[in-house]
Length: 251
Image (tube, rainbow, N blue to C red; front, side, top):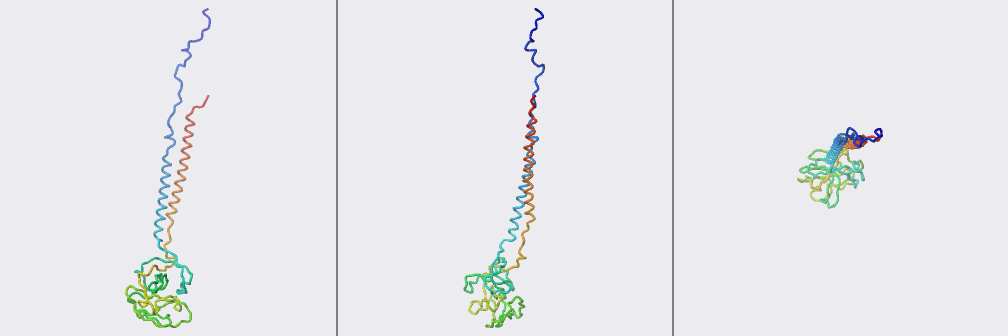
């Protein structure tokens, strides 16, 4: 009975070496780095800040300018009734002869704002003939090419010395303008400098907002956001591929 086959002992069926264990290396931190995405977001934030600062800076340059609509024919033909004019706010201290100003007409008994031309300032000696078309200031005849052309309406001549701190005003349409020539006004028809609320300016002289840095900031912010989105997508894909390669293929 010695040649009868016997199964090998259980111990002899075990592998001679330990089974292979698939290594799991934490590659997420290496492959899916957040650094590119963080850098891109930082660029986007910097662009937003640049655009915001540029908008605030240009807004300060144009602050205060406004549009006013002429309500009468007193300044024709320079500013016809209904025309829009650009006004820069001033306090009256820097007003000079020849300026067209907006002012409160309370000194003339009207609770409204008028627009007229400054002819004389404090201390000036103003002489006007009966037509209102020949005006001299301190002995020098004014050249006024802006006056309305038409048949003159004769009135009383005017001669006045402008009190200190006050302004003598005339409309360009002398035939119909109710201005400093009116004899019933106090202070020789003048108005206080403090009554001035604005000076008419050429619209072309209004500072134009420089939007260059605004556009640069906006473009930088957009590029940063796009780059951050791309970096996030690439990171997710790399993490996914790495995890798939981490799993051994089934046999």
